[in-house]
Image 1 (cartoon, helix red, strand yellow):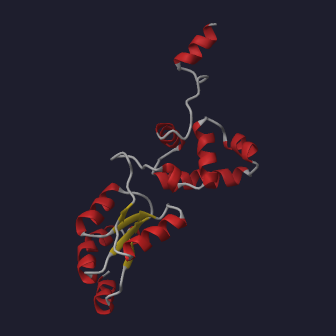
Image 2 (cartoon, one colour):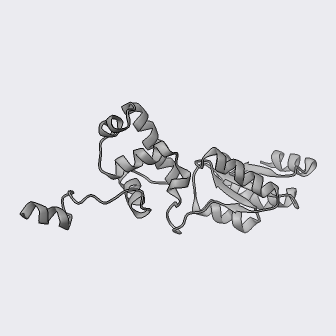
Image 3 (cartoon, one colour):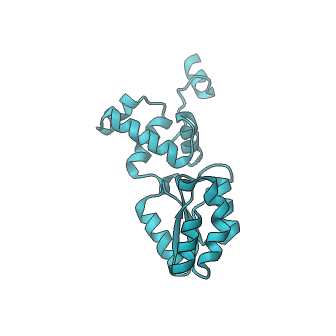
Length: 184
């Protein structure tokens, strides 16, 4: 990290794009020095996925942008362009503790897969519905979990429901609607 700081200080680039998680905690600790070394030019922090502590570090050290690498390419390009033009861009969740903007951080195919997951479908059912292989569904599910910071399919389904990307099913056990239907 020290070598990178020396090089940045010597060359004074117009903008620095830093992948913060690649260097681990050392990158977070080096952010204040990095921002100072490139000043008055902006720093955009990129992260493998949204992380509240790293986001807060980017904001507090004076970086002009924070973008998770799970964002789509157009968003990343636009964010860097905006910061290079003098603006700021901080891709942060709507909820303080949960990733937000799922529809903007996932591809349309990933949203289709997430809807299947949220509907309680198996990988096979999702693959049949979408006309893709089970292996492709598994890859999408892994990418979705990483992109939205969910630990498992259940958390991903909850986030999808909370953000209106999927509807609650009335036929699931334990739901009042399901018990009323069964009793009828």
